[in-house]
Length: 278
Ligand code: SPD
View 1 (tube, protein in one colour):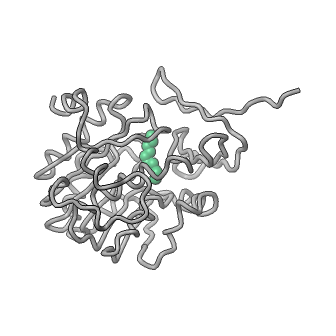
View 2 (cartoon, protein in one colour):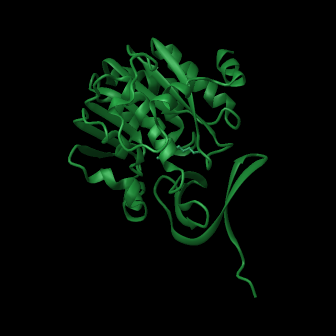
View 3 (cartoon, rainbow, N blue to C red):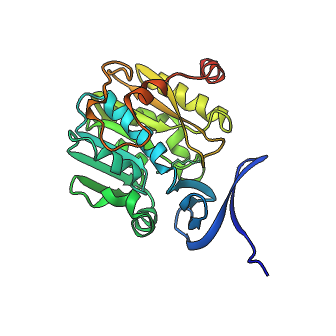
């Protein structure tokens, strides 16, 4: 008799799901903040799940982590001090460390179990977490940002979806604190969900950034395992423009990001452009 098939399914919207066939369940636990699971999938390698939502997979993690990191770090002429809020799996930290100008990376992650599980099950993603330039701050990222004014060149908000501990990471007071935590020429990027599945969030985060920063931009990337596959990032900047003076001279070891991809990511489809202009 055939073995029964095991599938992980994320209910992405009320009427849309994504399924990955599971070869093995490697880990499940309830942390103080969220449910956490690791599966070995047949098609996408290992899969990290928080509160039932895909956070990353071995097969497509590079798209999200590179696009969240290299677009802002190439917009800043010399990023030295970088704060990552969330991102306990270490994927964004790994990419930040590819920039030779970076001297200090602070990872402010509320859930230490995410870091521990990433180190155990996703060593290629978490590889930068033991680098001497990295400082792990286990605790509330919102509080950390409030308490560190005028300190960072770049802040990257690699949040989970806006439920549970991440709700405050999608609200205006947090972005006002980010503005204060950045140096006079600093800039930030936040993951801002899918223009198909989470229209209101895309709109709201972009408009918060527009109110808080002199300039705000939306850019896109294709992340196959995130709801609908089309993913948005919101960039708020005090000074530097993301499409000025960008060259690929500083690029190293990327699989998705290039100088051309950087520029193209800001070319918004008409329906997205119209949506954020409303
Ligand atoms: N719906 C998925 C949104 C997840 C964004 N953060 C993922 C963390 C990966 N480092």
